[in-house]
Image 1 (cartoon, rainbow, N blue to C red):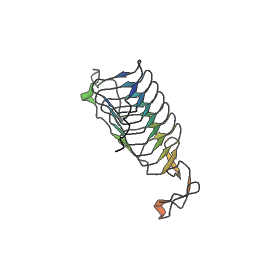
Image 2 (tube, one colour):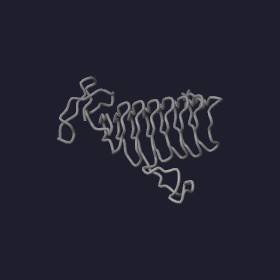
Image 3 (cartoon, rainbow, N blue to C red):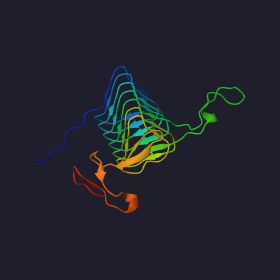
Length: 197
């Protein structure tokens, strides 16, 4: 007798959520009340998309991500597996926003340059943080609540403030590591789980 895998449960989408017909939402993902998932967006397996979340056109979200209430993930964003996005986080996509052109006409999609941001595997973005476009948030990095991220964040960095600056190195378990820092050639070692690297 051969063992069979249990079938993956379908995505669960709240009645009040608005999901574009060509958006793809994988098995086991839950999309909560009043969330909006735009055209061409892709959301991976076993994600949690909270109440009031906005997922822009073409946004890609990996597997097992958690996006908390009222976060705004605008077009041009890629989120890898296992990422945490706190409540009210905003990923922007335009460094020079204007409502109108110099002649006073309303701007259209043709009048601005779309910025692209990538959030690498396991990173965490704290509540109320703002991430400017054309940046990379490194693997297992942690962005403090309310931070304004204006430049790339290295893997395992903990950044806080406005503009965000690195204050520590973080383990995959989310705890601060004791180290001399990778820039100094030192080894990172977690005091909680013992992970190094």
